[in-house]
Image (cartoon, rainbow, N blue to C red):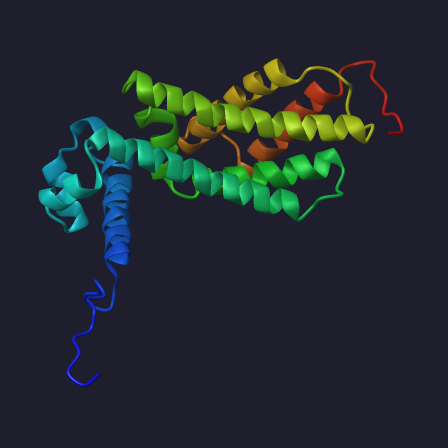
Length: 220
């Protein structure tokens, strides 16, 4: 019909309201990665400073988040998601590889991802610690997902006759702690080794857990 008004689309600058909202959130998280993961750190960052670094207003901050803790929580999940996606992609690329090869591929992917940016290491292993019971629960929950991944690899290796049958949950939890501790120390310059050497050591540790003295491979 001639002269009929078009319904509003909510688009501005070629972007929908949802797209603009997602972009604002991304800009806040990018700014948080810099401020929380480098200088001055989470505890010394203010809403005003984060908003300025993002190129947005404090009003826009409160449209996306309630508190800075909410930002840290979202950033911690994002950093873990990046690492998890990298690991799962490498694991999927070697579905039939022996456990030693799969472990090397998984640890190479994880180590490369988390150490590629020192700010990710700080978010995951430093800034998240001791903030609140809520974030501690989140940290432990994400750590449990890594434990589950190690247990799944162990059980698959058992089914292939490549590992001793046992309950691996306790060992996997302890192993994840050593993985994170070693990578954090390496990133901080406290370990005199290349990243490849660190990965090789992690593979050796995992194989020692899966194949205790006296155990022999069996046919599945």
